[in-house]
Image (cartoon, rainbow over all chains, first blue to last red; front, side, top):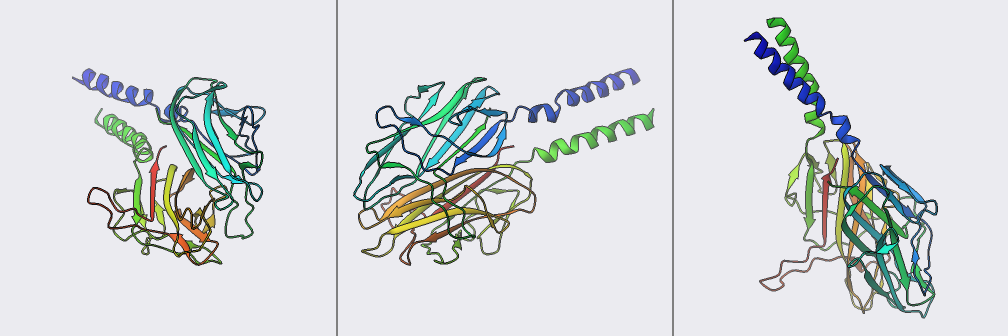
Length: 176
Length: 175
């Protein structure tokens, strides 16, 4: 009986040691980054949106040109982006499209379009996707506009009590 | 042997406690059915309706329902939805909305949406990931470019359609 109790306790303690909380935490992956630069895309081919500020990063890397994020832990990810399309001059109207790429290939059904005009010169566009990423997959945002004076805009705040409006922000985290 | 067993169980219990507490779930969702306009100089906290915190788990809410209080430290996903609108004819301008943590604005959390006579209403969604500690207070502030621009609630739509609320916020602990 004593031997059975000892084996039971040993098994229980071994089980909890195996399910070490720290090893589970090492599989967490998330990133949040933004841009404080106004950006305009190439009108023929589109461009990748670049970022300059990283708020949070764990088990991700960024590309050297800061135009993509590199997955380090394979899994299912929830990714959201938000941007501020705007006309950059008076008398301009048109649209801006935004989509996602993985390893340079556009993702079907990820494209959104927002119109801006002289009367409604700035808008906020939010986009999101649930996607499987493999280790070293590069995820990026592409954009294109119908006019050279349409892009995404950064707005410097004049108040100390209000943060500046970033032109772009991306949030990604691993859910499985 | 009995002493050994009691010590052994005690050690297992002590080692399990952090695992249990760190993995506690935390979430809250609130909304507003009130049209709101901000202070044009300082901005204003967006108020949620009292009693609208459903569901709620491991959060407290301030008495005015203008911010939430974190009880479980961790990484949180925060989503807000706002219905920006001009509240009078002939008006055009914008609304900015951002997050505040312990009374300080959160960098990179601000967004701006224009509205005018041709496009008098627009939805705004803000999504943010951030670490919260126990006791942290978190709220959403907004400001407008003019006095007749704010957040609108649209009621009395068809029987098959819910009211369009002026504001909604969801926080969920993901790690």
